[in-house]
Amino acid sequence: MIKRIFIVALLTGFSQIISLASVGFLKSLDETLVYDIGNFESLVVIFTAIIALGLQLVTVRDIALTDKWQKILINSQRDRFTFSLLLFVSVISFDLFFKEIKLDHLLFYVVIPLIALNSDYSFYGKGEPVKGAFLSFLRVFILSVFIILSVVFDNEYVKITYIITVLLTYFLVGLLSSYFNKLTYFLIPKKDFYKSYYASFSVGIASFALVFFGLGIVSFASFFFTEHAIANAYLLLKIYVFYIGIKRLLVQILFKELTDEDLVKSVDQIGVFVSIAVIIVFYYYPEFSIKFFTKDYQKSLDSLVYLLPAIFFTSISFAGPLELILKNKDRIYSLGFIFGAVVVLLLVFIFSFVDNTNESYIYLAISIGELCAILIHGWGLGKFKFFKDRALYFIPSAIALVTLNFLLMLINSKLISLISFVGIVSVYILLILKNKIGKKVNIEN
Image (cartoon, rainbow, N blue to C red; front, side, top):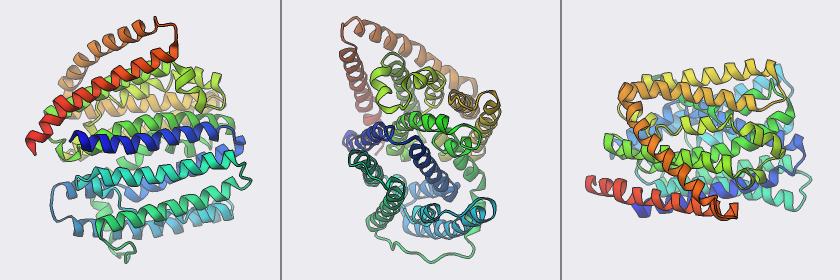
């Protein structure tokens, strides 16, 4: 089990580090290009969520609960592909009637059916997270390296070559996912595809709502905030999404085992511990943790405090949302994310009238939305006991980590203090994974 975690962590960690490095290079591009690439990436997130729309999560759950997964996956993929064709036509029609048709946007929209034909999500339900992590790594790696090379070699056609790279990357990953699953890549559309989406409608709306807790909010906020604010928000939110990726890593590896309450509690304890450590790193060592990735460092530093609560709120329960799904508490799962997303969207709109040049309000909206979501999910999982259990772990963890950081900061070098802090925290987390979670999973298997 530890070997499985190590391999997935290595792939995911390496891809995320390269992704963060690409953000550091991206900031040197013209602000308009950063704005455009940010919007394109945000649209990919939104298209992915619309195509998934609950069906993907339900499919992963069904695959996890049966050995006859091939038929389930094929039907799901046919439904996704059919819906993606409808979405493709709808998006182009929207641009035709309400905006202007741009050739680069038209080409970019080809990514919609390519997203649908990618079946990498199935590996987490099958208990094969290494394959899923490899494909995710490949997708992030290729796009990140492209951005880095575009900056290094001063690519004059960054926008169009970025779009082409996105299309080729999703095509390659989709082909590989089909090859690993030993299934055909191209599928025949289904007339009754809507039935599967209707059956998972509430979970689907919730899954779509999730995009507005991260990069998905960039496209929405671009209607109300200035280009400068959106470019800054995109760069800092990439760091936030990096953290969310770490969070999902552990949950995806243990997806099939999350019906065990003791295991869920151990995973959530890691989540609380990690969130406190990350907040300390961002707050006390910003010159190492965010400076390289921001276009306007001082402004991002001033805004960071509004994003830190989101990191904590989303970490109160790492496994909570998927635990709700596995326990068939779909309505509570949906209510939490839908209500939280509505709060985020409303606040972004309202705050734009306060100051549409300040991206801090976008972060504040996300933090409040995350708080709303965890309050609903926590209440659905265990009411007061849920929050009491996590508070009992949060208090000693916070005291221990703050004390550790204070002692390390007595060292004359902040860089050595940071490396020591991250090293000690990492070793402690690995020990928890090995001694508490690893042994439990091995016993159950």
